[in-house]
Length: 374
Image (cartoon, rainbow, N blue to C red; front, side, top):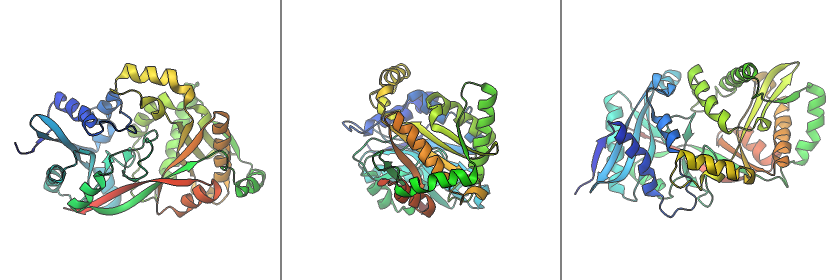
């Protein structure tokens, strides 16, 4: 029977869409099963605030009763308003190693986007650049760290043979404790502290009012510090609160840092323990299994991911980033952790230089965003 592409309509279709991901990773030792509950929440168009300003259509590719591929077609209205363009996106792409299936999926997503006035399609994003995004194109020998993507190597061929071309690469750097503190970092650290009067404090998770204020501070600095980055779209208040509620469940307050000058927060650093080291054992993606593995294996986590580090524009040449790098590194060392700095745009020269020259990071994974005219 030929491959059939059909839209996801019912809640059972959505569950079939979610669980089909396992079909494409049989025997892959680096696959980290997603938590089914988290995926349902991410795709819930009534509860996820992303869909208050954006829309998505999911499609399944089926053959002889089995799912052989899936894809999401996404219109991010806030992106198109920000950049005054008509770009649609694809995400949640999974596929058997068959070009005919991939072509059929991209055809379906592209037709849906084109009918709604989009002129190009970009991806993968799941469902936005503020979520998991990018196709892994280099560095398949290790599992992904928390909130990073992973996929079979042949996805690159399927996507490129359909006609997609590279739009932007993003890098991940491995940071090791034995050489993390470069001579430059040590040399500048005390000088910056004395000159700027910067103080570092942890985020307060216990005081509800203070936690709420800290979340607002992070949102304000983040939306300001990243506004000139390629592809950046500001979080809405609801989106940021939605994300913060999730991250609070897995964050370590010792690794969420604020840089303050005269009591005012001027920068922050967010690093998360790599809980994927525990969830990789949760083979079916169930809630109880995930909690069990997290509780019993949490102490063995030996890696953290530096997700974001940003300063207000007027402080970016102050050297305060050095202070944040040094502090998060020292705290990770006490916990027996190395780090990953990810993701960093290939066009972000300052951060790439900091990762290699200041922190002696090894660029060990590359993720790619593709684009194609419709």
